[in-house]
Image 1 (cartoon, rainbow, N blue to C red):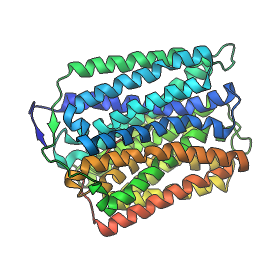
Image 2 (image 1 turned 60 degrees about the vertical axis):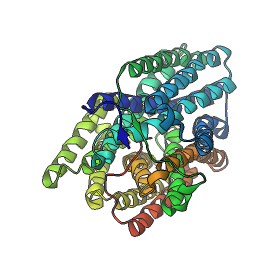
Image 3 (image 1 turned 90 degrees about the horizontal axis):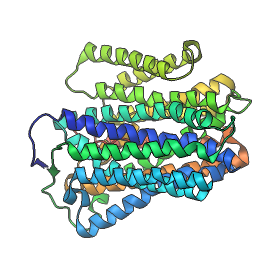
Image 4 (image 1 turned 30 degrees about the horizontal axis):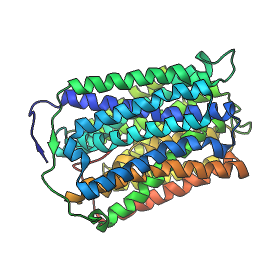
Length: 468
């Protein structure tokens, strides 16, 4: 890669792109609020309500397939039009998707809601393909994973705030006499439309470095000759699917009498803890993978950061310290996991995946507060999975990196299919037992980490990583 425009500081471009990470995290997590809302509004089964995630993440698959076909026959589109134009196009499509919520609410049509979500997913597909590798280029290669984890942390800030803000707007502020209505989504998503258009205008005005690849990949599926990529595609499928499964069912799960019997307006705060855990882990991952911080200083920074972000979450959620103090124990286990992983992506990935599988099994075989905290704790260990899987998968791909990246984004299809499968199982055996679906996901991810640790060795932080 070479840089053809400016050679100066990358701070402003990094801030601008990280803002995009925040917004697509916010809107992605809004789906978890929409699911119980639309389920009640249209009297849907669990399977039918999971069509929300099916069309949204299915758009990632279709969009990336289209992108891949174009790149196969005519060359990489992003390399041709530039990262900036790719992100601008993604923002405009996402704005259109948000605006379609207006007629969907007016006509109270579930089909139109799904159409709007599909369009929103297409916009985010372009943002993912363009923004993920772009952040890795904004600075020295050895800091790529650290930068991506930092951007992901702000992505997780969006997913943490979304249940609180979105839940308040839909379940309370725009509810009519406390009743669920289609119009509760009308004004919020029109506001989101304006925000995306404003971001597009600001991005258009900002001067961004222009990175273009001088290497031309050969025709064909050359990226698939790398075994770590093939296994990594499956790992991304299971990671996104497992993460989305849990987030999609938390509100309904906590409403079960044998769990906590909470209302939607209370459950949304605990959903924020699930996504907030990922934010904590990603901030810690950014520090852990920072090669400029060593020894005791790194450990001290991680402990202080974990405490500070926990206090931030405490300030955001409508819960007392006593209600969420158990979360501190889970954070301590997460910190211990980073120290055991010793900044080695493959080893840390395997360890975190095994902990996640264990926590979900504890959820399945317990009830009450134990089941609740076990499932919420998975968010902490999801934190570094996307970036580590992405990094390990494209290690050594060279001129096939862009092709490999598009195949990995295609695997986000897991977020469409696995929640749908869990929804079908929940209708038959109940939500509680249906969580065996994500257990399978995390066991495969653990296998992928072990494989990469054995075959690739320790992959340093100089690789390209991405953010979900």
